Amino acid sequence: MDALQSNRRQFLKLLGTAAVIGATAPEALAKGKTTQLTILHTNDVHSRLDPFPMDAGRNAGKGGVARRMSLIERIRQEQKNVLLFDAGDIFQGTPYFNLYNGEPEILAMKRLGYDAGTIGNHDFDGGIDNMRDQFAKAGFPFVIANYDFRNTVMDGRTQPSTIFTKDGIRIGVFGLGIQPAGLIPKAMYKETKYLDPIEIGNDVAARLRTNEKCDYVICLSHLGFKYNDDTVSDNVLAAKTRNIDLIIGGHTHTFLEAPVTVNNLDGKPTVINQVGFGGIYLGRIDLTFERGKATSTGQAVEVK
Amino acid sequence: MTPRRFSPVLLLLAVLTACQPSYHLAQQAANRIQVDSTTATADPGMASFLQPYRQKLDQTMNAVLARSTGPIEKSQPNGPLNDILTDALLQQASQKYGKPIDVSHLNFGGIRNNLPAGNITIGSIYEVMPFDNKLVILTLTGDMLMQLLNHFAEGNKLVVGGLRATIHDGKVQSATLTNGRAIQPSETYTVAMSDYVAEGGDNAGFLKNPVKREDINYLIRDALIDYFRQRGQSGQPITPTTDGRITIE
Image 1 (tube, one colour):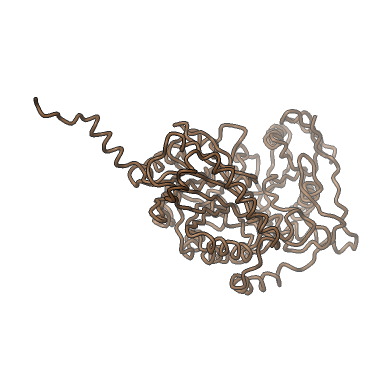
Image 2 (tube, one colour; image 1 turned 90 degrees about the vertical axis):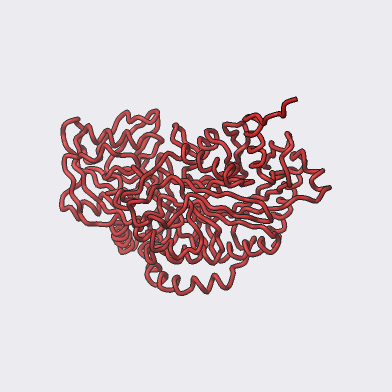
């Protein structure tokens, strides 16, 4: 309870800091024309339905879907507009997956009320037929723009992107998956075709921004946070594209204490966040939108 | 005065303006919330949903195989878990193969959890090795073996049994088999490893054409379960230790 209050205080403090940085904030608050949106997110939960076992490990007792449920329900009571996303690798990592092939993971996510997810490499671990069977139970869409599933049983079971409207704000969400070759056994991903995430990401984000008039564009990515070589990652994606406001990442199990910001091709900020693995953390990003066009200073909103 | 015509440029501008989003971001704040007993209680509905799944799981997973005096953890370049897992695979694969095997190999990223202090259960082994990967025995030339070692030495991710190696700047400087054989470029050596890596996983595509590949139809996880059960039957608890088989220069 104390920790929750402390979290809340921390959050309010951060919001306060952000308000000072956001140049348009004081007028916006005075006019009262702002709308709040809370994004909650997980990545690489890896079948961690129960908290980590109470052994001497550093994660002992952390995580678990039952606690995540109370936490999310509490935030939904406090905030009107909440979206919940996952960035892939739902499957594999505890015996739940070996025994039940991912069914309880997906059904738990349905109960948690996920709004969308993308596909991680380990979501192929039970084979692509199993992916089809389990994802069919989800009740939320899987978005992935750079996997061509046409010659597989997953054909028609995913979509490149989806759009949410909250109090008039349009939020476009699309997904990007990692190169399967060399990472996933071919027998698992079969005829899935991998398409260039930068080219596809740029196209889909532009379509969401321009054609679909989205006010905010989110990429659920399983590309990984950053690599030592030039392998495409969230950092590379952010720098080489336009129109992506937020990348919710996964794969590299990166514990970011706070999101990082990378300037995109237009010199505008793309925020990247990732919250480790195993459901140890729930990521939370609180956004305040203002009606109308941004003023020139309003663009450089900093995440603290 | 002639009526002014709309220039195409102005028209385009008008269209673009009409497509401008109607909201813009004014502020943002982020916070990560640790999910533990201090931040949230367990939701009863979710807990009862999980109960039947957990019950059957516990029956299978709670069987104790062995005991350890401390946590057995993976680490780079050496770790007690790296050593015990590859030693276990070398022993179990040799038994199953019916002949001694020179080297065992695991990909660092494929070791998915540490082993706990105290009771090591079947569930603990599933946590370490959740994948249904099988052991395969590759016969490799000395050259190919060195290529394998160098590939995984990059980033100090070399996890091996039956071998000691010195690495400098991600390259193997020297490698010695603990069975006394010297690594000669054109002689052949047997390596027990995951079918995942043998089939080119972890970017090891160069392993697709070995001198010989033999499947021994033995899941890595089953090999580990068998090994830890034997260790438990000895009555002696495991003391986590590493012999420093990898040296970084």
